[in-house]
Length: 355
Ligand code: NAD
Image (cartoon, rainbow, N blue to C red; front, top):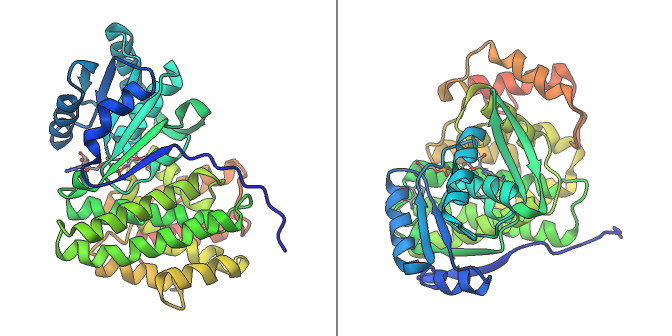
């Protein structure tokens, strides 16, 4: 008999195959006529060119400068370009790094964003940005960073490499997990999270067999949408806090770091979250979610240690010190000794219940 508040806060969502073709119509729908298109360099730039093509004369610039962890200098340079070109809408095509740049610009200019996600990062559903300056990742929250429209086009995900597909999907599962036990969660959000995790876990093995499996790509993107929406409606806990600290301090790859941490944080929080664990077990189809997530990462060839991601051994203490400084929401109180044990296991790649 839980009492709860539910306030829907998700953007307009267009989901399917070939949906990118609606981009010009969606920009116009926002009352805008001068869009800047954002992407990462490399393959991202080609995607941006395809989007710019669809936009025709509405596209005033394309900027392929997005990088991971949203460094402030990159965002400030992008804002200069936005001002010089007189852009009145932001269009981002790519993974969470590109969405991060869109949010950073929106935070500073209040321009509307349309996001076309290609990975499963789920950032397009949140009004949160982790931006880095001087080796620290600072969390920003603002309603201006909430996208106006998200266009999920599974065709844009078909050539996302296997490693990015798996790690960004594990990142999305981590969103769903933290939403399941968030202090401000509710049954509606838990249903989204559970269904999202189930979809992602189910879709990953076929994607690894065939990256162009459209049914599995549809299911994974749908799962990422649901888990992102669940994260966007709740407060993050230890999993996200640690991932931010490690990303900021050691420049570790974001999604891979989430993937390594996830089984350990689940094992850490399991004793205080029986209902969340019940839902998680149901979604994964295994009785022990922490072990199952560790085994899933192994089966999918995802990284399982922070060591292999480049974190030095003496970084364990630094991470613990930083994580203890600001108190934050987590079902199990975070104490230095227990946290050190968790980070140490994640660093070495041990299984979640090893001693
Ligand atoms: P990413 O955006 O860095 O993309 C990973 C790689 O995949 C890049 O090299 C990119 O060019 C490539 N790629 C993307 N789409 C492709 C395609 N269609 N074809 C080929 N290659 C493609 O990684 P990510 O995991 O999507 O996002 C990580 C970033 O997102 C981090 O900076 C993280 O902080 C942020 N994030 C934020 C939130 C939030 O709510 N604020 C949530 C999740 C992630």
